[in-house]
Structure formats: structure tokens, C-alpha cells
Image 1 (cartoon, rainbow over the protein chains, first blue to last red):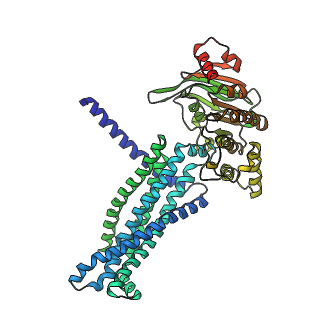
Image 2: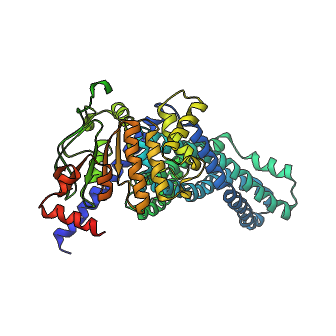
Image 3: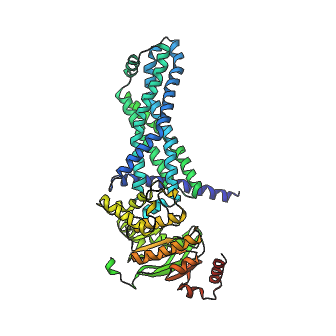
Length: 262
Length: 254
């Protein structure tokens, strides 16, 4: 490839990158504008909340339970060295409440819900169903995007609480089988170290993750093109981009919450 | 606006319309006038910009140059609310029907109705849905989902969904594409019935000559981004123009 042609390719890629950022920004702003304008599609939002919760419940139950159990099992030897296995419940609870539950819920939801939203909206775009809504004087953004983003923003924090509970149950099972700790003693010890800030941070995180998963999935699906290939691409990028953003948000929120903790 | 439009008065006026996609120049100075109550067929080969033309009329695409005036309003200059009001008067039947596949036929038909006509009672909604379904002869499919319907049934339901808002203008994008000859004839009959029953003005985009002959009061031949000839079916094809003749011969052989 000649130097000039190479330069042209780079310049086009750069143009596309800037355009993509601009389009995402416009989509983001439009979401807030449309949310507070006109009649809310409440019924569709409830339907989406149910679909999101229903889709992820089994997977979150399984991964949450295993996470709690395995984390407890892996932490035991280190604490046993210092004869501090009695600290296991609070150690595990801190890890689950502060980081694991929100992250596990978000990553599973990104894979399950993000891809499903991306594929659904993508296929609606390429089969002209979104155009059909538009020409029948219905606002497709309000009906499809606003409802799905709000539904995932509302549902993922609820799933996060559920994941926390299931993970703690996994941890309890491991502790009770090994140390014979009772249910009440385990949970008393577990919640001893948990503060309001921990729970607040977890909620804030899962709200941010839910919003990210919803908006990225919708953006990718709503702007899909090039037929069935575009639908696959939309579903795939919805997962990859939202997972990437979730980790960035994790770092930022942890930094902010640590500032308050000190 | 409706009282301003009388028979013989233009409902759609396209003036010197240009549209390109990158280096692909699709429409290159298109002119067309459609009068109230008329069925105009836009004929042309695939990829000549027929669908682009009607998408500009409903504001799904914007022209690069020229004017597209529908019901006295330049579509590209309308604000969101004005465009919404205009779209309520236009029915658009998509090539692949574009039925909402997560909804039943009933929900597909209710969807635009309940969002655009507020305060309808359940009984009124049911009555209107059943009326348009009966008009397209598919009342029995009311509780089916689109995946359970045949291609012809989907087209009919797509048309019913547009009729539920009682449009003044109907735009049909390839209404007979991908259908067997018998179903094509049924769709042609339906287009004519819609014109009579709902007093619509229509533009029918097609490359099917039987459809053009059966449904069009006037035919406009789109070639190389411009209308090459406009007139009745016989006037358009009674010509020595090689490109029109070859289009006719190809369809005849088909």
C-alpha cells in the first residue's frame, strides 16, 4: 500500500471514530430528551422489566451461588494460616457487597440482555419495523429505546440485590459445612462490617451498569445496518462495548466511594 | 388542509429532485405530480431509486436538492410535530410488510391506532381493527403472529395496518414482490378496492407490469434517475424507446 493511500485509510478511520463518538453523544442526549417528553410507554417498560429479570434470573442464581461458595473456599486457607477463619463471613460479605455481586450481575446481564436488545432492535431496523413505526406517526425511540434503557436501569439493581443474597447463601453453605456456623451467626458476622456506603455504592454501580447495558444495546441495535450481518454485529458490539464500559465505570465509582470512605 | 384539496388538484408534487448515496446518484432531477384520487405507478428496474422516492415523501430520507411537496407542505422543511401530522395522512405499505413480529395481528393493528387516536374505548378499538381486517379479507388471522402468516397475508395485514388510520395517500412499495401470480392478482384487486373504499391517492412502486396495468391510472417510467415517460400504461409502452421496450419484453418473457 502506498504511503498516500495508507494516510487516506488512517484519515477515514479517524473520521469514522469521531463520527461514532458524535452519534453516540446525540443518541445519549436524545434519550434524556425523549424520556421527559410526551406520554411514557409504561406498559412496554413493565414488559421489558419482566423480560430482563426473567431472562437473567436462573443464570444469576447459578453464578452468584457458585461465586459465593468458591470465593469462601479459596479465602479459607489464607485466613486459616492466622487462625482467623471466624472472619470468613465478614470478609466474604465485604467482597460480595462491595464488588462481586454488582460486577457478576452486570457482566451476565451484558451478555444476556445487552446482546438480546442489540439483536432485537437490529433485526427490527433491518426489517424496516422501526421505519414502519415512524411512518405510522409513532415515536420508535420512545417506544423501543426509552423503555428498554429504563427497564435495565431499574431491573439490574434489583438483580444485584438478588445476586448478593444468593452469593451469601453460597458462602454460608460453605462456611456451615466446614465450620458449622449457624445461619444467624453467619449473617450477623457478615453484616457487621457492611456500611451504608457499601450498599449505596453497590446500588449506584448497578444503576450505572444497567443504564450502560441498556443504552449501548439500544444504540447498537437502533443503528444496525447491512442486513443480517449487521444484526450479529450489533449484538456482538453491544456485549463487548458494555463490558468494556462497565470495567471503566467500576474503577471510577470505586475511586469516588473510597474518597468518601476515608 | 383537506378542504383545500379538490379533485384535479395536486396532492404530491416532486420538482427537480436529486438524491445520492456517496458516489451513487440515485435520483437525478425527478419531476412528478400526482392528483387527488389518482393511482400512479412508478415503474423501473431494481436499484433505480423508486423506494428512495417514496421514502423522501414520508420524511424517512431527505433529498439533496429539489422539492417534495405532499398535501401542500414541503416535507424536508417540516418540524417534528408537522411531520407527525403529515404522516398520519399517509399510509406506507413496506416491501416486506414490516409487521411487528413480537405482536399478534390484532396488536399490530392496534399499535398505531391507540397511539394516534386518544380516548378510544376498548369496543371502538376492536370494532376498527375488525373492520380493516375484514376489508382485507383476513379477519380469521386476528390472533395469529406474523410468523404464522403467508407472504400474501402479511402484505394484506401490512396494508390493513396503514388503513386503520384512514390515510389520504397510500404509498405501496413493491406490493406484489415475491408473491405467486394468483396472490399478485388478489393484491392488485385489494389496491383498487382501497382506492374505491377509502378514496385514497396512491403511488405504487413496482417492476411488475401486470400490477402496473391493473392498478395504475397513470404509469411513470423511472430510468437512470429520471422519469423517462409518463402516461397511461398503453401510452408508456407504445414507444420506440429501446430501454422501455426491453423492460417490457423482459417482463413479458418473465
